[in-house]
Length: 196
Image 1 (cartoon, helix red, strand yellow):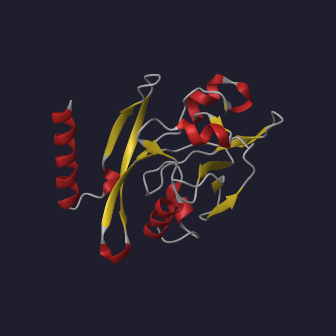
Image 2 (cartoon, helix red, strand yellow):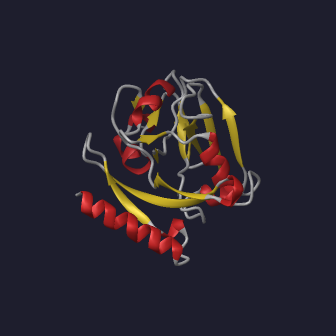
Image 3 (cartoon, rainbow, N blue to C red):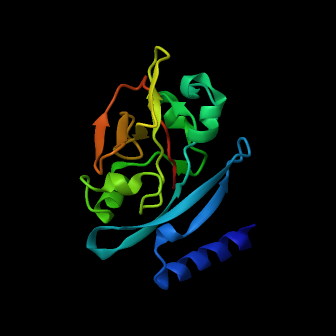
């Protein structure tokens, strides 16, 4: 297994060095907790001083069943299409070992790469240039109300890997911008994990 991973990483570095953009490179991740398979996307991000890093993101919304995770309107079929919606307490624990919720540095670098906050939202959406393919999965309230499926996508984030304050990235149908907010931790939102 170690040889396969090393070979894959060497191939990835070679592909990027030959001008293939990182979002053209996809992979697969098998969650060892429940055996679910997720597409992944490798995204090259520019750092300060001209350095760059390649980050692997889940290319699909997390769908790991756990306490604090819900299907939209409690229909399993929504989970099959859009993944689960998590309250903040669950979101802090939901990503598999070796993965984490995206932080502001990762989102900021991705936003800069795609034209800034006024236009990057369009590239984050399904079919967009970033390769993230964020879905309009809606959200849930603690009282059991669910709204906005097919209209907006709400994704948990945090300021940094140690921060425990709930942050939210929202993509909107019909506009190119996204919004970046703080929100009550009882809300139920989608998750895209990033490999450590």
